[in-house]
Image (tube, rainbow, N blue to C red; front, top):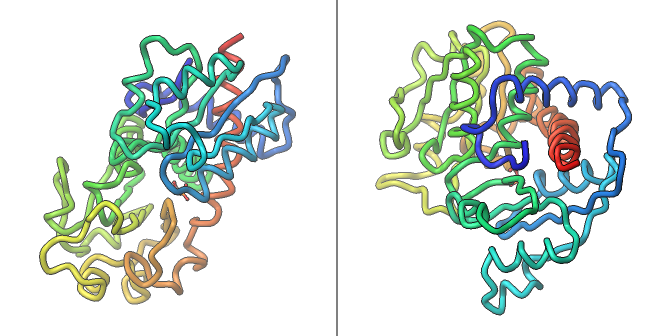
Length: 292
Ligand code: CP
């Protein structure tokens, strides 16, 4: 695998290879890079989890991280993303991890650039490293994907996590349901109330209401959204035995999930973040080793 751009391009076999390597890292395995590699993290949109966990992962596997601050780069002077990445290539960078507001920004980089590209989120497109850590979290919990019922609730149309997870989980044999307001279902069929989903789902994954992408629909208020679509303390009591709660975070506490549930015994939200470190170690090692 030269790049990690979209879950459409990652085979089930590659997914399981990365999950297996993440499990090895979690168990204390040593990294296997046999030469020095240089990486840079280009975040043109805000990030806490993805940026810090990629940087921690890169350092832990022995890659050299070259600092790049999008807010103090020549992008502010009008340099294109292509010219920026080509410049880093000329500086000896082997891989870039990019988050960008534009959907599929990476298509502009595929011709003429030799640096490996790891997509850390493209607009409302995809978020493959989040998807892989979500898969790792589910696999650790249930030991399989086949037959697992996953309900994804919230701002589906603006969510790159929902798209990446739906592609990968469906291909791996899980059943996906969406619950959201009609204005947020995008290309998917969706339920518009929780009804039987609470008692059937093995995984309930909440999505953040993305105010920065003008997500609010006519009539949206935080209170009505929470009442109709939020995972409330009352709704948790109807969840299936053994079912877990996930959320890619950051969280709007009291909007898509009640604050009391964030560290509830069913919640794997902070575990997801820890799993993200091992998954990103596996991703970056896999891609750098593949460069030879
Ligand atoms: N889940 C996620 O992508 O979080 P950040 O925006 O903090 O990176």
